[in-house]
Length: 167
Image (tube, rainbow, N blue to C red; front, side):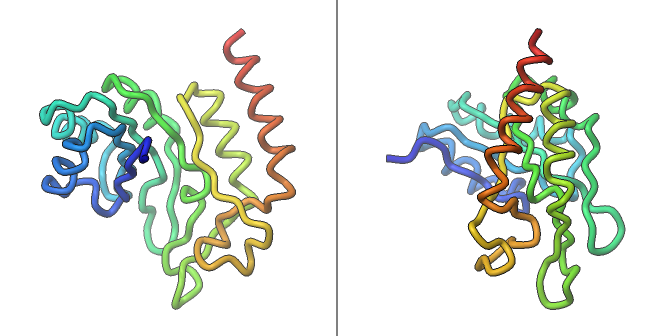
């Protein structure tokens, strides 16, 4: 059983894929392409809802900034939330440095907790974070990952911040 289908950022504008995913009836989590403005996600969401599936999640994962780096514009989070769908913040892919290691992508995992705290303070509906026991030896995305043994502290901080934000 599948609870959520995830559409990768680079495929977020592929109409046939979005319609096929929508037809399953599962919740659809669409990652915003690094090349797309947050307000343009309304067109992506409309393809899914137009196919009869209103179970849409929109995920922010950074925007291309020059070569080999992404930036996270926190204004994107309320802009996307204004489209009427829950917004998820991908804190690990947001620190990715595409092609930054030459033949593979680099990342700045030390900024994952910082960006996650900012997103929680803004009021996102959820967070996406990748973790691994040994990120430097993970099969992919290692430079972006939070070490598994660091996750309890990170999650505790985020939970306390979310509770404070909710008052």
